[in-house]
Length: 121
Image (tube, rainbow, N blue to C red; front, side):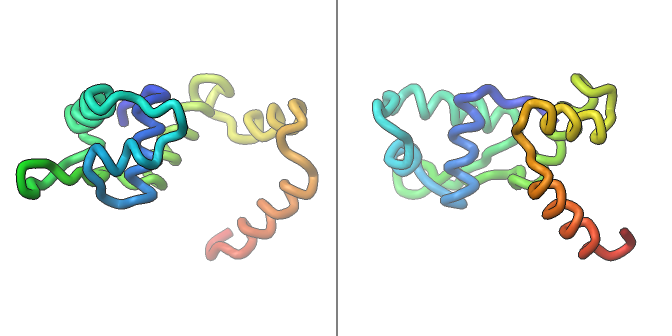
């Protein structure tokens, strides 16, 4: 799966949340200062060329919607992070976040609870 820039990912987060939207609706969800309409439109066209977004015609405009779901992108991104920075080891990745105090023992206990709820664990 292709990697998204920060701006592309920001727009994808909005589209995942809204499920479908025109450019104006995406801009409405963005924080101040709002980017220009043409900027957002260009980023959405880039997302379309990368296969993340598609559209349907509605009147004179387009309604855009995600072609890649958030979970699939999250899995691919986490896998790439583990591969590129932690030699493919999720254990090393979790240890890193614990050392950086970004993950507490309580967080780990909650993660283990979730793992134990899953079938075949």
